[in-house]
Amino acid sequence: MTEKINIVTLGCEKNLVDSEIMSGLVHERGYTLVDQKEEATVIIVNTCGFIDEAKEQSVNTILELAELKESGSLKALIVSGCLTQRYKAELMEEMPEIDGIVGTGDFHNIVQIVDEAVRGSRPVWVGNPVFNYEEALPRKVSTPRYTTYVKIAEGCDNNCTFCSIPIMRGAFRSRSIESILTEVRTLAAQGVKEISLIAQDSTNYGTDLYEEFKLPELLNRVSEVEGIEWVRLHYAYPGFFTEELIQTMADNPKICKYVDMPLQHSEDSILKRMRRPGRQRDIRELIARIREVIPGVSLRTSLIVGFPGETEEDFKRLCDFVSEVGFDRLGVFTYSNEEGTPASRLPDQVPDDVKEWRANTLMELQRQVIRDRGSRFVGQVLDVLVERYDGRSDVYIGRSQFDAPEIDGEVFVKGSNISIGEIAKVRITHAFEYDLSGEEVLQ
Image (tube, rainbow, N blue to C red):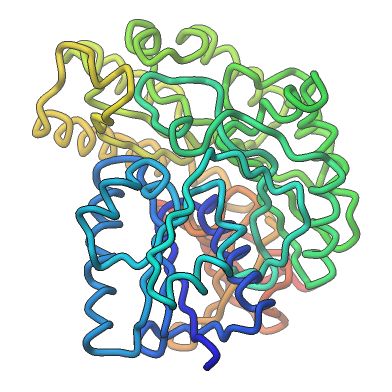
């Protein structure tokens, strides 16, 4: 019997790429991929283990899906991803519902793991997380046909005191430019127009493989691939954001004027305890330089509140920093005490209720900031990648280069000569809290 396989992806877009590779491998093996979990004979849950909330979601999802062994067709439940890399022994001992696990460095063996799990052997494939995507593997893209993600590196060497990524994903390792370009060409031939280059630390790209910062060259070469119209960059580590990178982003019209640079905090004492690069003065100078060289750039960052030792005064100054800098997009996380990380052993842990209050306060402050930032687009003509049509409101919905898929704002467009998956010229007429609206500009 041909197994029917459903893959459930939790966590970040890096996990999504891994799931798409597993989909390609099981499809190549001859198994049938199904969208409905109730139809599946095998379910693979690709988990996230980054923070407590993500781990809880992963465990709850595993338990919920395990019920399909009674109510559905499920024969084997396989768990992959960061949670298994970190907690393989605990999962296999404490969750008999699991029929096999695979870590972040072994998922390319998913076909053999499925075969073993179906036979009832409860396979455990969790070794060193050293897989680096250099080998050409089949991949079934699950994002809309016009946009997708490409991993340019895996792992991280920065050793921030709060982060468990090096434990789960290993040391930083770049893919070769040639392997990335081969994948991008394949995706472009399938109709992809927007490529989002992702890594835990994208600005460090190439230093291990070529002994120099190679991200500017990579961005330019990806943009030269026929069919690619937008190249977007995610997770730019501020310590490695070079002047050459700034100039490259400014000069190349295909590179989205969008910087996703997680800063984590503003205060020098907290940054030092986090083991983050530079200090607030360096951050302010970098942001000022980016905005000077790339006019109109959209800046996104993420911040952590409630890190051990964060005082009320630290938090107040963080709020002042957010108000003064004026980020276009901002994500706020409460500090998660991750076992095995240096920060988990620090004194002066902040109570959970205080963390939540600070997160809510900071997001409310950001709502006020973004109202002012969005209004600058009114009257401008923007390129908008059209993603869907809302028949009830008779509007098309898409994104400009200033907004990443899934996480940022959208543009609502009135027009008649518009195609989904194409880039339209849109004159912006209104700015809302996170979104824009406008009218198609006929060419």
